[in-house]
Length: 633
Figure 1 (tube, rainbow, N blue to C red):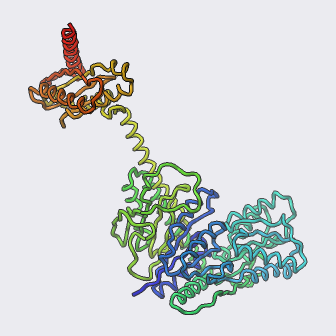
Figure 2 (figure 1 turned 30 degrees about the vertical axis):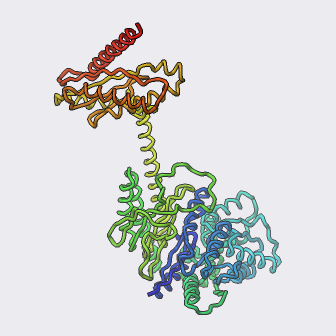
């Protein structure tokens, strides 16, 4: 069967508005076996542009051309740049699109709820029925189309009723709950007289504004009226209950998905669909025209919320504690899997950029076009109790494993640290991300743990490099004196315990000063490197060698034959001759070699053996000098 696949782009999942729209979309999708993939971020949460860039990276992952159609909840984005970027990308794909609350794109199908008329009706009620003359307005971001419609409706109602709009009494927020508290704080600091009413662009801001006013000693609605917009659970059950606006959000989501599905099936659909909202008059304006929820039902729902929240907090505490003790990526993935098992989902995929451990530098000049790597890796795929992984898959595929059935609801959330993109995770057929108020905290915990593993990986690499620099000679790329002593001392002790036969050879380069003085230090370094190569080639697998000083080298060998010193000297001299023939320099590579073989016993030391080999090497060096003098005579 040919299943339809649609993408939904949304900002935020833990707000009641998004929740109800998503529930409507999912209901229609399940009824028609449509695969829905949500691409979601939580921009603006920590007021950091760099952090937002990391969040918004998920929208660059969305390969719209891989879907049959898309739903754009553009009204959930307060940043017009991000909204425009997403619209441009989906437009380029050429797939059918239904957009929420925006008539700016005539090529798209639009579904909207009449914000303007119902907000105007609410403001007029406050003015005409409650005789309000001085009104403060707490607005959402005007770049958001819904916020703009509500603001315009407020202004129109004020003007039509002959009330002057005082710009100082308008606070521009971002629809976030603490914007209501900030609005009251700014009002108090202004020293202005208390207004007759605070009209708020949504319930979240209205509830915190009312709470802040009551903390200051003002009573709602006796001293001042407060209204909201959305008719959320908290608004309905607050004390006083909030005068607000009820919108058919579930129906909007269901209808949007239905319109897109019909378009994909070749059925003609209206370009614009508008749903009606209604004013809900309640206690916060002095009108109690609605029946409060049944007390038993309210208590049941409230207890369920508290129980779910406590359960989620416990889960996050265990996740945080478990991740704090991990030192490797595998340990981290094990802890994440243990928590995923409790999320009540069918499938969880942890997808990381193929270079997530490799890239250490931070580019501070990241644009919103930040891209995922061409290939991704999925080190953790959990599905119905079974775990597996996929080494590589193209990021354009998005899913590490292609969908083979219909009716799957998938949520994609970004994993990042600051603006650095680490990857994303996918939860399939589970509602944790939309019902839990702590899903964002879960995402941050996973992101931070992966970043910590990444940093630990680079710290270990740096420590390995420091250790290498401590024990390796940079010119010859063999052990230096420190490295030799560390390595050979352990070998020597074991050989003493086991009474093994060992050989220690000391090598001193002949004529290095002559080469440096006559041909330069670069040639001297070249000669030292070639000698080091010869010494390495002469070593067996039971030997280690090192540059012991400027022109001094050393070899330590275990389990040697009685005549190994003779064999080594023969190989060494042959390799010297071959090297001189290959490099064809105006000087000759030459070195003096002294070797000592001993059957080790208690009391023998590495240093005493080095001294014996060094003395023997110098005896040979003296004999060479005497021989050269005799030749000259």
